Length: 335
Image (cartoon, one colour):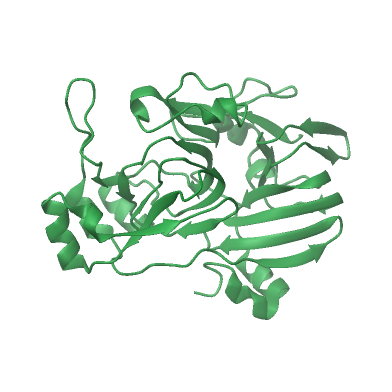
């Protein structure tokens, strides 16, 4: 067993008409075209699985690795692999979307998971904005949606690199043009499109909207602030925790030397600059914006002087105990 360097699955072309070339040009991904919107760094979605790049298991899908290594890879997780990690490049506005919670998705989408997610802004043009929540109540929003005027109710937020946004199921959102971000989400492809800015394909056909289902699940009038986070000192640097809601934990490693990560939980690490990951039997160099899946059964060290984003399953009880009064700064942890 060893840490798995992952090769992403790309969504591009007509699948992401809003995508661009930044995943290739800036983040050095092997993107297939100049309309590549999503790099699925760690994905077990059927038909959209990421692959192992390194070591004896190179070429295997994530799904096959879960079957091969079982709980040594995933920890105590049973059933559906819980997380999906993406990098996104929004050359243009994405559609206005909302996602259901687990109960609604299970009842209406063939037993699938719902989708709570989070964004970390990696890069953006000055003044870039995204839609984050709605200002209208549910009845007014329903009237606007059925009239094709959703944009009148959107709450717009100006962002800059480093901003972290928590997007629970039921939150209306749309990534704005000129933004590249990291996304962690539940492993689900259930999306309800509420509005797509009147866009049409080359044949003049608009993309499908899911107005009624979207209205069913929207939490209208609830707008969350940007995530503040809570930082704790650790050997080899510090860790800033942003979100821990039962679906996932999102943190930033602030590494200034050698930072050990204990075993017990699967961890997914995406460094912002070159680093090294070492373990008892070996080591690996990791390039900026590459993504490594560290099995739950392994203890590793992250070495370097850089920041890295880390997503994992959550242990809320342990994190509340570690943070004490600072737990209120972590989205989802005390709500």
